Image (tube, rainbow, N blue to C red):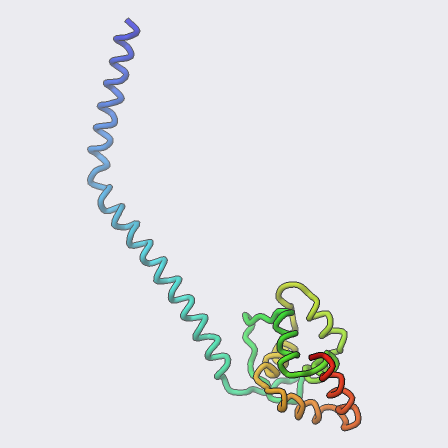
Length: 169
């Protein structure tokens, strides 16, 4: 008798699967098409986001200079999403051939702050005015940086700072 019960249960399961398959068949094809459309849309959105980021950074570099309230110079507008890393600060300072003290004077912070920036892991959390000053310095060459520094620092101190900058190379 148990063999008969098992056979009946197996047959009921088979018929239930067959009926479910028959009911789901009309939905299966449109569902697959919808999945492929969604996947394609995700790829397109990702590509558009990358292009938007690229264009935003390009626009930020091409944007006109605007006056900054805390620093007397005209500085480019720093995007709130722009990031500065410790490695970036160190390489920028070395590119400009400046000591930490000279770089600090140029940006408008203390030398200890520049030292902390260079040794801090990851991205730096800077105030908006400081971030704008660092972004303004990014577009300078070594000679331009020396000229800006000479404008900010008296002549006797500028010589000492230039000599200190040569030692850091």
